[in-house]
Length: 469
Ligand SMILES: *[C@@H]1O[C@H](CO)[C@@H](O)[C@H](O)[C@H]1NC(C)=O
Ligand SMILES: *[C@@H]1O[C@H](CO)[C@@H](O)[C@H](O)[C@H]1NC(C)=O
Ligand SMILES: *[C@@H]1O[C@H](CO)[C@@H](O)[C@H](O)[C@H]1NC(C)=O
Ligand SMILES: *[C@@H]1O[C@H](CO)[C@@H](O)[C@H](O)[C@H]1NC(C)=O
Ligand SMILES: *[C@@H]1O[C@H](CO)[C@@H](O)[C@H](O)[C@H]1NC(C)=O
Ligand SMILES: *[C@@H]1O[C@H](CO)[C@@H](O)[C@H](O)[C@H]1NC(C)=O
Ligand SMILES: *[C@@H]1O[C@H](CO)[C@@H](O)[C@H](O)[C@H]1NC(C)=O
Ligand SMILES: *[C@@H]1O[C@H](CO)[C@@H](O)[C@H](O)[C@H]1NC(C)=O
Ligand SMILES: *[C@@H]1O[C@H](CO)[C@@H](O)[C@H](O)[C@H]1NC(C)=O
Ligand SMILES: *[C@@H]1O[C@H](CO)[C@@H](O)[C@H](O)[C@H]1NC(C)=O
Ligand SMILES: *[C@@H]1O[C@H](CO)[C@@H](O)[C@H](O)[C@H]1NC(C)=O
Ligand SMILES: *[C@@H]1O[C@H](CO)[C@@H](O)[C@H](O)[C@H]1NC(C)=O
Image (cartoon, rainbow, N blue to C red; front, side):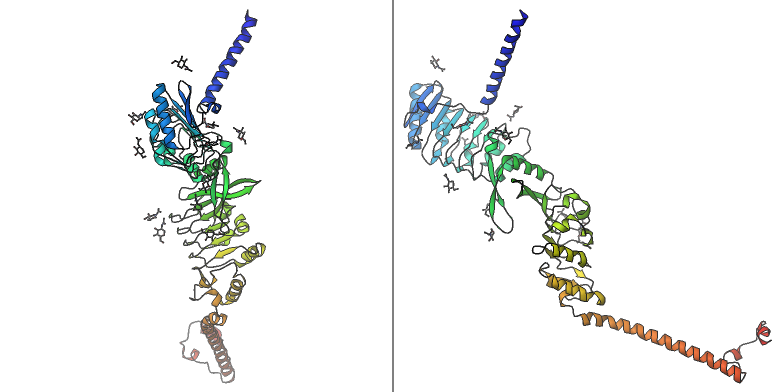
């Protein structure tokens, strides 16, 4: 009867799916034990393989009772479940000899875990204590562990030994003081068996917010940390990128990236910065041009650019760029800038009143007699934005632009111009003398008829008869 077989087949398929599904979730959890079977300050066997111990307030008592129960029952106990261990320090060394494959210490007041665990451990649950310290030795010999649950504790960092665990399911949700640096380290390993996070939606971490004007931390979701890792992977080769500062877009914390490309022998600005790069340090390189700021769209969001100690010759490329309308700090100390495009900088300063700053110390500007007055005036009226103004010098005179004596720089010029005046005066005088000589000769010739010197001394030429006639 083919009609009846179809539902049977479907039932079988559903059954298989259910079995497959439960198998899938089982991997995510250590075996659960019903804590209503608890007996105060005592251990009980809940089945042939599981020992349940409850409400102990001394590590020593727990250890004694576990050893006693295992000895008397002579059972093959694989699983130790300790509920509400209400003491501070757990030294796991006493568990080694029993070779449990599952160990749970949940719902207690444990604060510090020390010692070594047995290498037979596959499932480990420390959820719901107040653990703030786990010695690195605790996990040092775990080479078969599959699930590690450290959720709902008080951890601020993860033991280093976690970094080398393979095929790991890790639960670190509900630790509200955890620094992001360790999670980043786990994620950035870029390995073939990425850590499988249990309860990822409840996993958060903290990162220092390092804006200049206040110190605080931000809370990041696991998803955001994962995104930040991606951002850092797109960092140019010569740079180190750090995506920890927040930027709030639609209430969701996102990243602003700091790229440090200093001391890298760069001869031009690096191309393709990570998304949201706001702080770029390219100091101590051999960069000659700021052109990337006007052509590379990844430079549009930069707020702070430190390009000290390079060979940059001009800032005029910045005119009309998104950078010039967004920036807060532009540091160009010890470069080769000779002219300051005052017209568009004045415009920029007037649009973003308070915060803008430009550093120009150690550049040698060309100070001409005809422009020096305006340049000095411009520097003085923008001294709020150019804090190192006293160290911006003239190329032709070794004095700060703001200390320029206009009469002095123009006097230095006059030596040269005066000389030119003398030459011109001399030429005019010569011309006048020449004209008077020619006029005198003509007068003499008309009145006396003598040819003037040197015409009278010249030998006759074959064509002279023409003139004489
Ligand atoms: C660890 O124990 C807690 C509390 O009993 C439980 O909610 C959690 O699912 C357990 N973790 C694992 C991985 O089994
Ligand atoms: C526990 O062991 C006893 C005998 O040793 C056996 O009869 C019983 O079925 C076992 N129970 C379980 C849950 O394995
Ligand atoms: C945990 O155990 C302590 C004694 O060690 C007890 O006073 C306390 O009530 C227990 N807590 C719970 C939730 O059972
Ligand atoms: C576990 O450690 C013991 C010695 O402490 C060693 O003999 C055994 O081979 C180890 N097992 C594994 C799977 O590494
Ligand atoms: C968590 O740890 C901090 C110290 O890092 C401590 O001040 C705080 O009391 C702890 N909180 C709990 C619930 O144990
Ligand atoms: C215990 O941990 C220490 C430090 O990580 C390690 O050197 C030692 O070999 C471990 N002992 C055992 C028995 O695994
Ligand atoms: C991790 O799991 C994969 C597949 O589940 C397996 O091929 C690999 O050997 C495992 N790696 C380790 C170190 O256990
Ligand atoms: C975690 O959050 C995402 C989106 O916010 C959601 O799609 C997913 O179902 C959630 N996972 C769990 C286990 O709640
Ligand atoms: C965060 O800042 C504090 C104080 O400035 C410092 O002690 C701590 O080490 C920093 N943490 C990280 C992860 O950078
Ligand atoms: C922020 O931290 C720095 C150095 O750690 C310190 O100099 C500064 O005063 C702090 N600022 C505030 C507002 O606490
Ligand atoms: C920069 O180049 C010089 C020689 O040209 C070399 O000695 C130095 O190691 C280089 N520095 C870096 C950071 O590449
Ligand atoms: C950068 O300039 C210095 C001199 O200031 C020179 O020694 C070095 O070789 C230059 N590096 C590159 C990569 O051009």
